Image 1 (cartoon, rainbow, N blue to C red):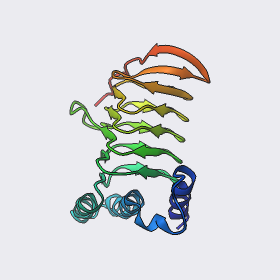
Image 2 (image 1 turned 180 degrees about the vertical axis):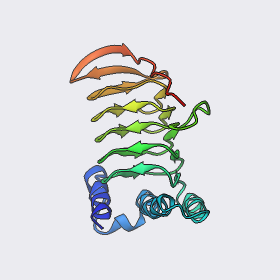
Image 3 (image 1 turned 60 degrees about the horizontal axis):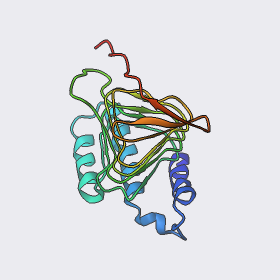
Image 4 (image 1 turned 135 degrees about the vertical axis):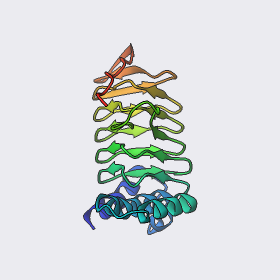
Length: 185
């Protein structure tokens, strides 16, 4: 219940248009709430039901979250249509994703295949993050940014395709991202 309350608070914290009980009509809130149920069933090793429920959620909300993904409290998906969150994705607390964001795999890894986002991460519209990369805390990723197999340190702003760091610790910089090390699969 506490997590649901944090997710509802995230709507009012991140969407200036939110009023009254409008949160009941946010597809992102429905998607994350139903994901928390499917994730519980997934962790309990209940077969098939989590996948069926996640696909029904995808059909009704336009947000695809694999039941295996781990998502922290205060999560907000704005205009959720087209959001894809893969099975081994890990997302920290108080993160924001806009529509058409993909947190996906590259198809090359067997165990950890999807991104890990720290807490306080903002991912703009259409951004694509692929592979078992790590995004630090308090990172802002711009719209349509493309990051594949590159870690992002804390307190940065990343933009572009391919992504590069343009702000680090409050100072303007121009730093290309460094490739992650290949995990031992």
